[in-house]
Image (tube, rainbow, N blue to C red; front, side, top):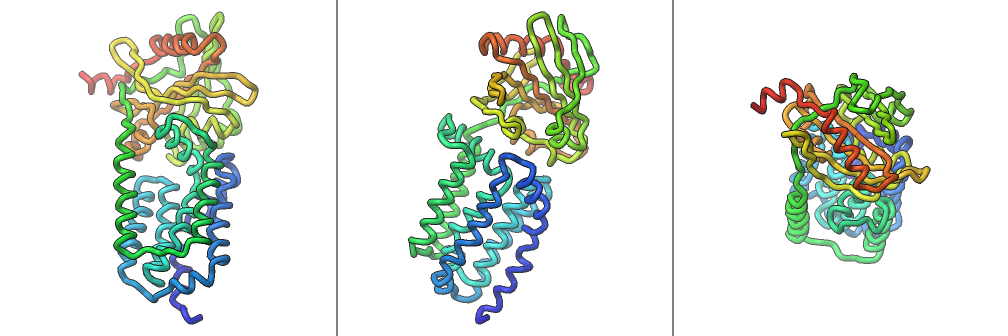
Length: 368
């Protein structure tokens, strides 16, 4: 009761509280996110275990913390502007912890940094993105994303409970600035590939020697692409099978997810993924190529791309950055079993694209 100003932390929970329904649904329905609640629980328990030391860090209000609060609200507002739920969640967590700086001083904020990082590990999609960036950084994923996060949380918990050191504001700014600079340099390492905005005519029932048969969406696909115009087709040939999932992005952008996330959500094991360009006549298509194994042991090759009005890309991050309401976006997943080797599977998909892919009239006119 001697620190009554900390009651102001309750309204500081509002930005994060607005995402309560989103968090609850992610924990309930997403296999990759179902354990993320444990990081929030850990972030709540650790201060209780270290309460005496936390009290010694409190030094009174420090208005310099308003700069951190403003920056965190900027992150939250950016998530609202770009319609990214995870960024809004991150902004809400950052705002809550920045208010510790405002109400309790820099020593309190500095000492609570490990708890802040643990809470950020609980953001939805962090498991997927952990694996994604591990693959980009070291070319492999030695640990699954969830296990990696648990290891990081264990190290941060040990540091919070054992190490007594807190940082001055100057040191804190240096550390945060270094992390920010590293993030900018890291983001420039992996540049997205772009190609022509090629589409597939899903009303066409014959592609070369292949015959198309419409198939109903699975319950998982209906939930994933709720609100969008999604179609699934299977093309049968003499000795080949190709499947196509085409989604016109007509509903909430929050229902469009990376293909890897979709595959992992149905318990597929993603073995590899990379971007490449495929020549289609005098045009070329930019795709993400994925090799995955289904729970039944079947290995498949998947091409994924996002086609806008003027270009295509296989990079989900590039698609998400460029997406705007009212745009003409379509996303495709084209797959075939790998039964006679990867090269043969690639040849099948490349041949299909050369026969089926076309450039929309408006895009063709814009390229002239």
